Amino acid sequence: MTIDQLWLGVGFLGQAFFSMRFLIQWIASERQRKSVVPRFFWYFSVGGGMTLLAYAIHRRDPVFIVGQAAGLLVYARNLYFIFRNPERVAP
Image 1 (spheres, rainbow, N blue to C red):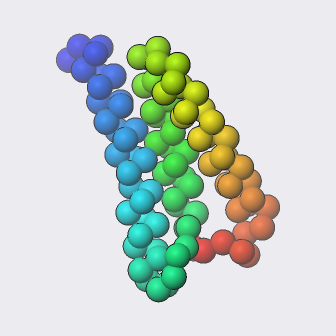
Image 2 (cartoon, one colour):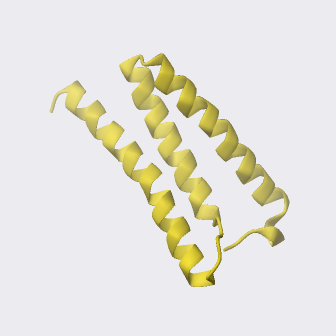
């Protein structure tokens, strides 16, 4: 396996993490019969965002880097609110 193939795998892994968050949100909403954003949505957002940021840095893509870095700030802030007020969060 070459370094390029390894990084391509990292990119696809990050995209898979990022995509899982939508599946998790959809399932949680269907179960509660209303729109909810469960805690794991944010965990997968952080995991996917960090992995995709690493991939973007490797690719030296400034647009992709800025986009992923900005998203990570939002995801981290939401997790901060969840841990600060755990009683207001969907399981």
